[in-house]
Length: 189
Image (cartoon, rainbow, N blue to C red; front, side):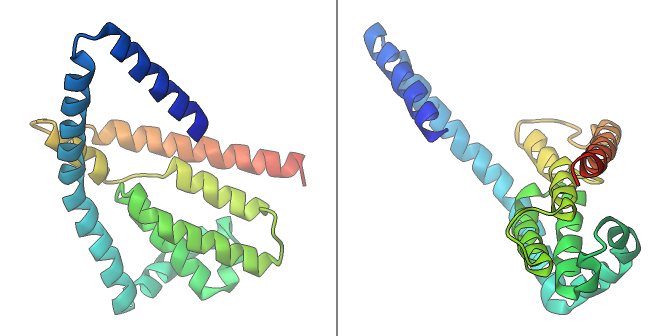
């Protein structure tokens, strides 16, 4: 994939240089400036919620959160239910996704999948791992904080007015994804 992006970038730069009117340089500088503004606008909320996640872990509340989510997550991940650290990583991932923080959820998701692999004693993905990855990717969101921060940084007067659409679409995507994972798990045991 890196080769494809590099090729496309090279072709576009070459075509821009052939035109020779200076638009390429102006567009590159404008785009770089906007990228920096966007990154800085998203950094605050991400740092805030990542810090909140770190506080949960250090204070021991992450274990309590895992116990709170255990009835639901234990049904989805019966093998992982036997290991407290795996359930803590899964619950932290789910919580970060509920808050709309996909970037903050990723380290917890990676830790959970690694632990699930250790518990299963195999290097191939289990059906349980696949369900977790589908649920993580579809990510049910109650508070889409990253999208709201993006909308706010771009001048939206009401960045959270998308909540009903986000709730519906994320619930449907999780339901369809988990149903497909379950059906494929039955089809290919």
